[in-house]
Length: 111
Image (cartoon, rainbow, N blue to C red):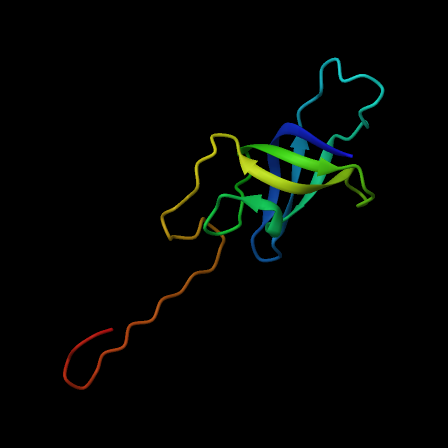
């Protein structure tokens, strides 16, 4: 069963491509909802970012499944930044490697 919950990014390892999201408490959720407080998130679950990365403290919406991923309570299937904005800048967020290449030809032109 997939559940959607708001949360806050606790940690993110850009080098390893994963992090942890602390879920907001579900008020009046009832007994059918599992008592999951945090979920593991892989970079492939990050939605709407040029570079699939999150920033600790960032507010997100998480689609997650109650599957074993010890020591975390569940696993994210989709993580969207709460404001829905994509970075779109082409520049990786802090902690993410990036590179560029400029070739200068003998005639002085560049590409």
